[in-house]
Amino acid sequence: MESQYKIKYTPISLNDLKEIIDYIMLDSPTAANKMLDKIEEAISKLALFPNMCPYFEDSASEKKYRCLAIGNYNVFYVVLGDTVQIMRILHGKRQIEALLQ
Image 1 (cartoon, rainbow, N blue to C red):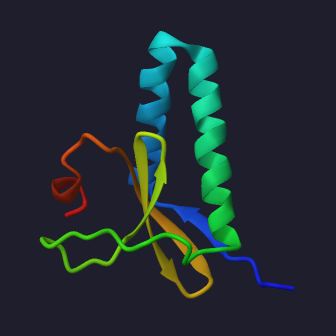
Image 2: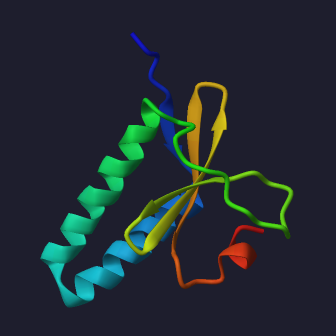
């Protein structure tokens, strides 16, 4: 049986997620709950397949983030030992490279 990785969120990634859900909630609580479920389900798959996503091509940063796309949102993460560290969760239209610095 494959070993399962731990999923850990940074405080800023938890704040990103809260902001996303709060914003969607203004328009539709149902849609906000569905998006939260969708994001959590996609991230949970990283526990079994942490290397399934490609690296984010960011020429301005030395950090090597992987990027999981979920609809209009991107989850940036790194694999450290047996842990998948969720670094940021950002809308695709934001200035991602600047926010990852």
